Length: 110
Image (cartoon, rainbow, N blue to C red; front, side):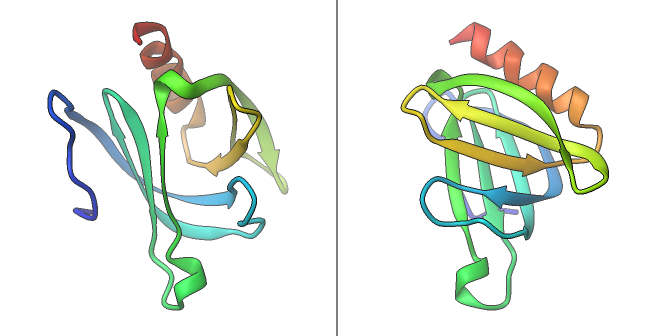
């Protein structure tokens, strides 16, 4: 995945395939894509063939209020991210506990 540019001083940490289930104000369906975790933010790029599935967003760790696990249908892969401005994102990644720990770690660093 190279649909992003790193900011000055930013480092790529981890890349993973996953789904997004909710974004503020628009997305409320499953969209497959790729997540890039950097030392400053989470980047998601949907890989849908049609335009509405080509979702792209960034979540700066400094703007996250909380990160909690949730169940996606029957699977323990969901990560609910609540932002300081009241928005929320629902991510889905295997090994979510590792990603939750990593996100919380970067939240504490900013």
